[in-house]
Amino acid sequence: MSHKFHPESKMMSHGFKPSLSEGAIKSPVFQTSTFVFDKAEDGKAFFELAYGKREPNENEKSGLIYSRLNNPNLQILEERLCLWDKADQAAVFESGMAAISTVLLEFLKPGDLLLYSRPVYGGTDHFIHEVLPQFQIDVVEFYAGQSEEEIIANIEKTGKADKLKLVYCETPANPTNALIDFDVCKRIKEKYATEDKPVYFAADNTYMGPLWQHPLAHGADLVIYSATKYIGGHSDLIAGVVLGSDELMARIKGLRTFLGNMAAPYTGWLLMRSLETLKIRMEAQQANAIQVADFLKDHPKVEKVYYLGQLAKNSEEYKIYKRQNSGPGAMIAFEVKGGEKEVFKVLNQLELIKLAVSLGSTESLVQHPKTMTHAGVPEEDLQRLGVTDNLIRLSVGVENYEDLIWDLNQALETI
Ligand SMILES: *Cc1c(COP(=O)(O)O)cnc(C)c1O
Image (cartoon, rainbow, N blue to C red):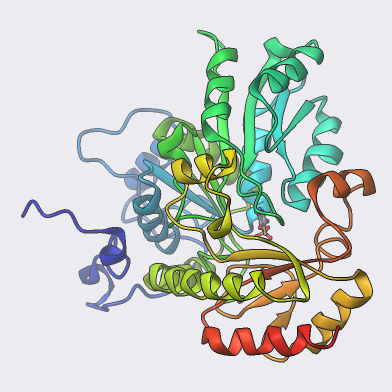
């Protein structure tokens, strides 16, 4: 009775009651826009709770109203997602960008300051630089490897340190797997928080979560995912997730209701199916990536490999890795000998590995960050971030690793 099941043991059934769905072992798709109230009094009570007009009575649960506010597929999915990150609540969105933009808009107001790590996902970077300024929100950036003193000096230089409201980071950083230290983010958040002005800390955990990294356990207030990647895992949907405390998630879900950017019931249903195999997929991908990275390290046509499983044991990065990550993951970047011409030769020659952006899926994907995912980043920033002409990003899938190595080898032979 007191046994505590692991998350992977609960992904098939948690939060779903078969007796409410004719005994079906799996949740049906609740493809419905609205829900019928038994009586007018119920409708009134459900809206009172949904709009926060009163506190719930003992054992009173908010009822189903309308699929922009709540839908069983999203509610069950959200309960299951909470188990991996040990969060109070989750909110599922129609994309990772919907999740990220909703967090930024909820916690930043005109005059506020945002501290964020670079590089971040291209869409996030664009939103921070092109959209937030339209709301008079100022931003200051920091990088992997930058000292805490330097980051603080840069915050002070803005003259708006007292307006800092949000620390936002993405780690490992795309595409080179550079690591941001959660402890530094947490100390900065605490340094600038006051009695009446909390500073929140949000982390994009798409690259490593929800298996190999848990930002909430390291002081983050919110953890964000593009569920399009590992959580969805089959390159067949777009979705996003935010997780955190009851208090902060009430705000996130409130804004989601009025932006109307929640995921659709069918997307929620597909994500529940994906969660059942999340752990075995990610573990198989990681086991493959370790083999593939090992092969690349020794290949004569490969100049450099960026993989968390190959960090130098005496490096500062390795210490952060040991604190924050329970595995090296399945994302690899590597430089081939040559430039864009040689890279394109390799990309065009691959037979099994698909040439496409995105990551975390069952099939392996390669792309050229400089001309594809990071094409919008200014040239001087690319240099500093290590996004060179000869860099390839590889997301390792669940294929047989010997086939992946064969494919990479025959493609590298052409240069
Ligand atoms: C893909 C991605 C996003 C954006 O997610 P979408 O589902 O494409 O909107 C955000 N952050 C990271 C790290 C990503 O890889």
